[in-house]
Length: 314
Image (cartoon, rainbow, N blue to C red; front, side):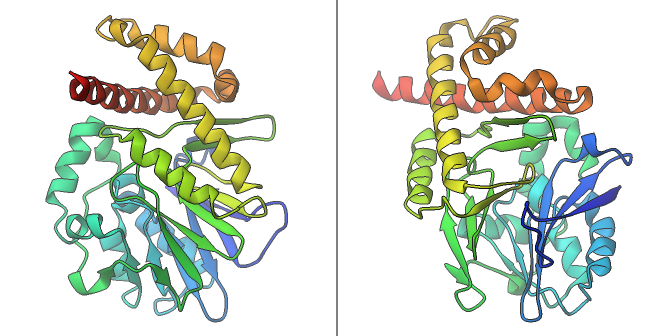
């Protein structure tokens, strides 16, 4: 496992880096943007990734000038294994760092047994590539509404997970998966919802409205999957439009969900009606397989939400 380092955005800054995990040395295999900020007074990492990448991540941080005592904060958008599974291991290299986490996620990182079991239930054998989750010492993890003397604002953004939060720093929004997943190349960009089981659409809509109140048109949005886009406000609205479409289409086809070819029928319908999904055909073959897997997992989350709503109406 190696890392690719990119300075942030079109307007390059020496302080913020998109440190992206690369498997087998190929750019098409990256799976997480770990955001790293460093200046003379502040250093933080957003979503360090799973345990399997921490040794390489540590080497990369060292190459950026982040020494053992330099890392102030590890900011977690949520505690899913691909984002936060390596936090305990990372702390062994940077013992001075403080972990900032949503209140609901703290206990699961202090004692990660249920988090590990839940990851296996949702992802199956995929979790093996991520590595075991090491516990985070209780005195090293906390929730804060603002971080670094108010320089970083914490915004609760539920929906993707009941322990999801985003971070607003300068003109950057570190959104985790609050606005879905983004894939960009020189030729196209593709977005899709990130709505795994158990998904709550009502909470997600509330979170989107909270973000839009921040008036983020002049901000850059930093995705955990993957990269950065200008005009965070526009990208959040695009995610809102897209997910509304997905919920509508899945509701229309809901009675077909027990068919063996349901996902094929659904995907074909979405590709026709979802303008943001139209570039799926251009995605690299290896990445496309993974995107399809996680898209189907997102579909399961939306189906679960619709089922629950129908039961509540009976």
